[in-house]
Each structure stands twice: as C-alpha cells, then as structure tokens.
Image 1: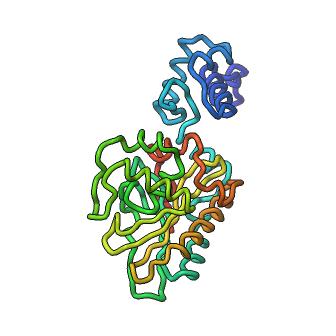
Image 2 (image 1 turned 90 degrees about the vertical axis):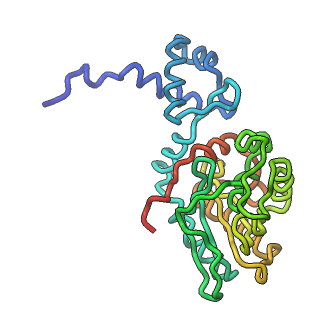
Image 3 (image 1 turned 120 degrees about the vertical axis):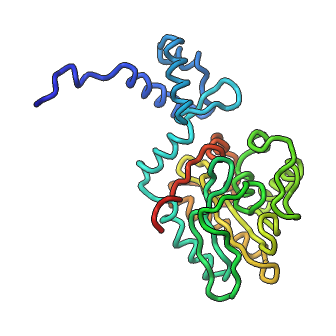
Length: 284
C-alpha cells in the first residue's frame, strides 16, 4: 500500500532537531540557546527542550559555560558512517610496521569514560619479553604514555576539568601523584612530540606514545610502543611512534602533520570522557 501524502511530510520536531545540528556543525565555538533560537527563529522554550534532549543523548555538549557544540556521540556516528574505516583496521598494519622496526610491543587504545580501553596490540617475536596489558583491560589516563598522549592533545584547562585538582590515583610508585606535576609532564610531551611513561602504569614497563586524530581533528585514540628498561630508547622510538600516529590519523581523514599532532582541538576533551569503545567490541 502506498504512503498517504501526509505520511511523507517532514515531522516538525525532527526537522528542527536537524536544523540545530546543521547550524552547530558550522560553529566551531558553539552557540548559546539564545543564539540558536535567534538564528533559526525558533521559540526559546522549544529550543531549550530540543537542545537539552540532544545533550542528554550525547549529540551536543557544553563547553563549561553556556555554549553548545556537537557532541562525541554525533562525531562517532559521523565517523563511522562517513569514513567507513574502522580505527582498528586502519591502524593494524602500522602497528605491525612499528614492531618490525623496533622489536617493541605496539598498542592501540581509545578513551572510554575517563579511562583507556586497549583495542589492539602487536607483539614482537624477536625478544622474549611481554610488556603488554590485557586487551580490553582499562587503566586511568594519567599513568600511561597512551593516556598522556591524549591528555597532551588538549589544553591545560581541559585537563583540569577532566581530572580535577586533587591527588591522582597511584598505580605504581612511579605514577605522577598530582595534576600540577602532570601538567608539567604534558608540556614536555608537547615539546618533544611524544609522551613518555617510565613504569607509571606497570612496573618494569617503559613506553612512548602519540595521539591519533580523526577527520575532525579531534584526538580519538593513541598508539604506544612499550619495552623494558634495557631496550628503552625513547629518542629513537618516540619519533617513530609519532610518525605512525600521523599515518593512522591521515587514514582517518586528518589533514595535519607532526607539527600539529599535539595542537589542542575543541571537543577532544569530550571524547576523553564520553567516548564509547569504538572498535573494542569488533573482531580482530
């Protein structure tokens, strides 16, 4: 049976929801509810309801004030539908090349609700050394090269919003104990172009890391190389992991290079808190 003409007419609330999303897609700094209402000639009351519904579902996020931006959930959906490239698939060959060049262990992780979720790893057959955590295990952001790479890719204000100003949970005796020292470490990370972890998350394990960016420029994952102290040469492996992160980022649609790998991009901190485990539940 054919659809009645009335069935094909746009639904007003759905139409307005899409209008809001399309408007905010072109506003990097975001807009307030009043600005959205004015730009679209919507009643403030209905704009308020639509915006807060979208925020509650993760499609919009607030910047800490009154301005709204596209949220992590929408970015993830757009990435999946638009690029049709799975992060894990895009990164795996690069991880293999890193291991072949260094004989270290290569890891890929995504942020998941303020922690790290490991989604892929490649081990070296050249050394009888295991430095990898269990894939699907979760660790805090502040005590690994992967997490610090992601944190260094946002500004200090965002790090403070994410972690607060209180003491950080210690995982080993070498974990950075507070945000002030962590901010110093992140500044050093940006300066050298890769993060360093010296037994901060796992005793005996030393790592370097770098963030992976998607087509929006936001940091959505990180790559690391890990080894033991005897083989740890960050001056060599750090630039290699940074170059690998750029390679994977470009496969995800990013247009930047090594010089902008750690440049803060608005919205990345939202992904660190709200990102679902994209790629984590898929087959290897």
